[in-house]
Length: 187
Image 1 (cartoon, rainbow, N blue to C red):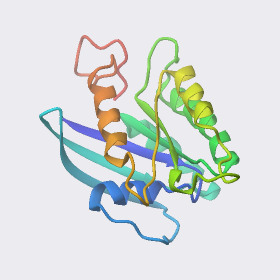
Image 2 (image 1 turned 135 degrees about the vertical axis):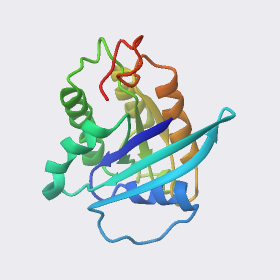
Image 3 (image 1 turned 90 degrees about the vertical axis):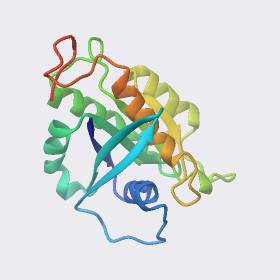
């Protein structure tokens, strides 16, 4: 099975860094702003081969019109914020609501596979953190999403992001339309 995953969030939160760390196991100190990059990775989770089709999306406001397309195609979503920038965390809930709107689902009846990711834990020093871990956990719980904090720079929890998301898709009512037992189809 192929997993279409969209990585969304504000500009400069490290979306590309997370994806590149996962795909190539490398970290670049600087990036040109992403408009859209697509990657495929073959991986194995829980002894099963998987193909992850990952779309690294633009975080800049001028490309927000493309988000609907990303959301329509995705089967799972990685929503990234920076733990040192409160405004990037505040942008996550509107993204969640937009995903549910695009998919024409209600959080109470259909848990869409979403993982909220607080990036840049390598910068977690006194006075730097703007978003407490508990706030991320609380937002995730509110929507039935998963939550992790990570560091693309130091490779903390990067593979776990994708492993948890694949597991979420596999163990949810969220399935392809062709699977008749699904309570929550939308692909």
